[in-house]
Length: 238
Image (cartoon, rainbow, N blue to C red; front, top):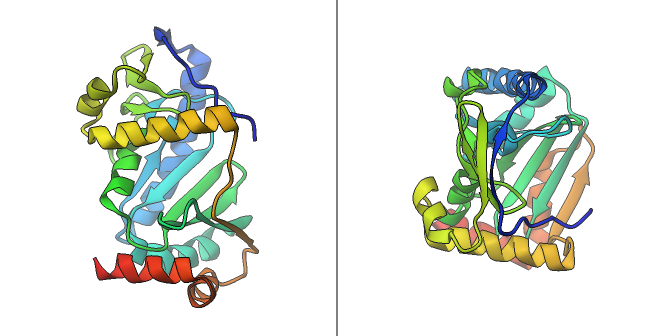
């Protein structure tokens, strides 16, 4: 994976072309279809990242996030039964962070569900990156502010967006996004480190076939890995 290119000392206004709006609208339609589907079953899904902010390109992924870990087994069954899956991946970035399951419906459409309750900081991460829900998501002109992987804050405008580096403007970004300054600083530190070192790996990245039971595999990991067992014990106690 190429290193994240951190943008420094940048501030500019970007005007979207007609083609940009068309691509954004197409990706939003794809995401909104899944939002509506999951909402019918009582879940609260969000579109997360560039498709929520608007700063997309043709290869941007459409990422759907459901923040409730209790939804995991039900969403897996619903997706398998109604869409089929190309792959499932269990990811745990560090021994102290939440395990998440990525359900790949197609090469650009992913549904992500945590396997354990998220911490408050992990909830705020999704606000930091930008998330949007129904009914606002149905109109691609509705976009939300958030920070991209280049450490630029994206501020939607009527014609496109304004973007600027968050480096040196951390308190301003915290205020605009409504997240704690500690979240801004933690994400800045992590992405700057990745910029310097490249991808440093994750604690766990396990790829499953579509017909493998995610819940059974998670229980196997819980039984055999002390860090995962400790994570479940701590998160379920809170």
